[in-house]
Length: 398
Image (cartoon, rainbow, N blue to C red; front, side):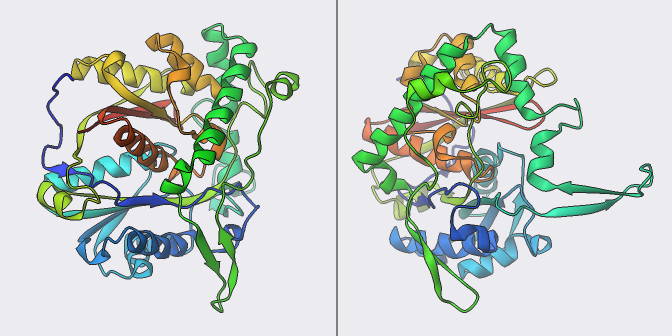
């Protein structure tokens, strides 16, 4: 294995100090009825309890979400109260890059010496997203109304087009054929259900009970509700919404949370479920590509990342990404000359859903767990974000 210097040599992720909720599709579960921040804080405490990791170790909190939630003004402090630990912290957001960016920011906090154990907690609820009314003196109505999820997905203020249009643009730019996109999507579903049937998903996602205001149970979230097997024939028969994009070859809105810890080297040895496993932060890269070409951005970010580390795709043991469109993976395969069947071995957001904030956090947890199963190696995580942004990061498991 090639040796590459770590960008945060004093920051580590203790093995096993992580977990996520399942990601039920929007409006399909009791998660649609709760304050997602409160649920996330309480669920983090529950997950850490199951992992036998006392939250008393946490001395700082980085939270990430993209959809406004009630009392968001109070930021990480109210979430920490729900977790049961009175610590300082802050909220960050970067559209669908939030889940990975929060992990990187936590590592920077540890590397600086400001904290020893940082809790990363990302979450979002797309169900019943807020509708806001904004003063706008340039509009004849003097106000503008925005439905946070659907209006933002449907309109990029920089280009005037929807996110879906960016996938169509990229499909045409790279001369992608619908047949390959459908075949890739069918394969991604096979990967997810194989991982689920093997018990792998249960190692990551934790069943969590939802309580109402009176403390009565509204149900237990114990599955990625809304995910159903889909055949290649069914995908092939679907109508194109744009070039190579159908309702089956894009992800779906969902609700959920995901959490992990980032600590100092010494603390990682203390908290890790397997002290012999070392998880390092190697490098990170971000790019912004041309207007309305979002699915292309992750591949370009990975190119930049490999160049700055001196690594190549043959050096990478686990490849996993945030793929809201199946086209993302086809483009990555073309740009990096990489077989798309070798990536996303345990499932991906294309199949299990897209709550935005926690999506790349769950991707990262699954990828690290897979790397441990394989005996270690370099782990490549990447994804796209609104505004034609690509983010990529490499971790090392040894």
